[in-house]
Amino acid sequence: MEKAFEVTNMTRVQQFILLGLSTRLGLRDVLFAVFLTLYLLTLLENTLIIYLICSHNELHKPMYFFLGNLSCLEMCYVSVTMPTLLVGLWMGPYRISFTLCMTQLFFFIVLICTECTLLASMAYDRFVAICHPLHYPVLMRPQVCLGLALSSWLGGLVVSVAKTTCIASLSYCGPNVLNQFFCDVSPLLNLSCTHVALTELVDFISAIVIFCGTLLVSLASYTAIGMTVLRMPSAAARHKAFSTCASHLVVVGIFYSAALFIYCRPSRIKSMDLNKVLSVIYTVVTPLCNPIIYCLRNREVHAVLQKTLHWP
Image (cartoon, rainbow, N blue to C red):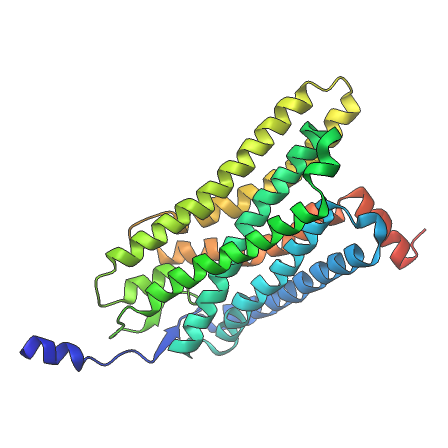
């Protein structure tokens, strides 16, 4: 009876303290300027890509349709995590309400799961284009592309509802300090004062299904592409195909290596400083590099950009 009374009277945490990326004052000022520049540059790059794809008929192709979706996602992605990173660098450790923390977590999970599925869809698009070029107009018709994009966004939404509901339903009775620059899964699980086995199981299964499932699709697509390219008689055709695949594989490698290390582990993560470094890679570096790797090095996009800016 006394234990039940004590449980009902436990003070539920109403807010969390985000320690941020760094607590050193001099270093924070430098990092704030660096990350603010990176944030604005990421928004500018992705806005430019979306504008070029929407305004030029020559880019109205499945590949660029997915790239436009990815650019839109990247803008949302950095806008979910970067503001709290910048506030932490400007103010130092600061308080965030429980509701706002869970809202940020919800949108973060939606976007990271959607990005995984979009990367797999883009790999499948390249697989069809290179391995089955004669069937490409049928297999990648507009209805199929739209269905893949909608499935990516809806899949991320469903997974996020399940994971965020489980994490928000846990009891947090202190301490309330998150050694991270945004509300992430592992730091929140570390702070829970109730049994988290079920939540960790949901987190682990969803990570296996989303991360590993989409990674296998991407790897299978690029493996098939590689085998097809090696059989091409023309050296120029092989070089063109390999250059495209290499760009895609760089993005996939950076994103998945960091994300899988953190999220495909059923136990709580202790090395939080390493987690912050890896979080910067897939929340800041990847959105910044994706437009350059995918689009701005692409000849068609480069030609359209020259035409738009009236370059010679």
